[in-house]
Length: 308
Image 1 (cartoon, rainbow, N blue to C red):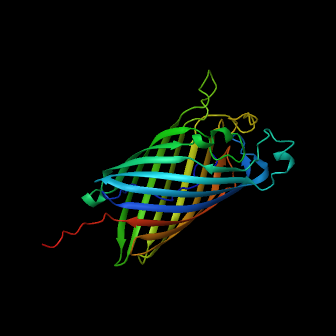
Image 2 (cartoon, one colour; image 1 turned 60 degrees about the vertical axis):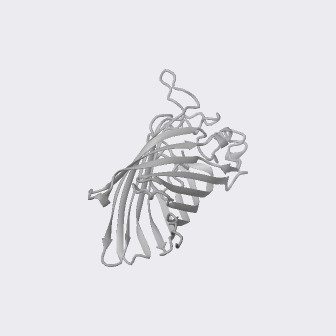
């Protein structure tokens, strides 16, 4: 839950799809830090025994399959550590022996297929697409009870609806505005029993942004992201001594920030983005995240007929 939005806006943004045979490769790194939670009742700040620092290296490959349909795979490697791993809150007073042990390795692998429903190029007011996705976190499931966890450690399946529009600005510039909403069913570690929630609960989320490029080779704009885990325990009542302690939380978090892009004529894009928490319940209230990435767009190679 803490790191669900670690790599927001890295690749595959918005409703647009690649043409059949086109490929986009993106490699990005994100650094994230937080020092405190708040509860989900009074929004009372709760100081953690240590700051948490996470580094996420992510490779994303997107391929156009047929007209209006693309497939995408995201493979992340994540390193999460506690800055004060020998503090009493991480050792003698910790709810678990491995509470602050460094976690590193594969995080949630994402597989997605996106289909375009409406196309502004066909004189529609917006481009709209629907994506089906799965997130696979089984690789680290036995570490999900840590404060330094890489995620909730299960398989999710869900759908994402995206809409957006692009346009020209003068003779050289352009703009782009997009928003995406998502719902994920999360296969449970523990099923719902009587009045006890399924662990982890299902999740809804969304992100949006506006990008303007006055000259064509650079762009800038704001970003906003949000996610909510729909049911669960308050952090003050959660069984943090168990493997599913953090996975059992309900929670909300909203971040805002911005991004800058540098675009070359031969298909390379360098992007830099930053996000900070502005609202949180049962989540870190002071998260900051900085991302840097490089994308490479490769159009379908055209075969030139041999000369007679």
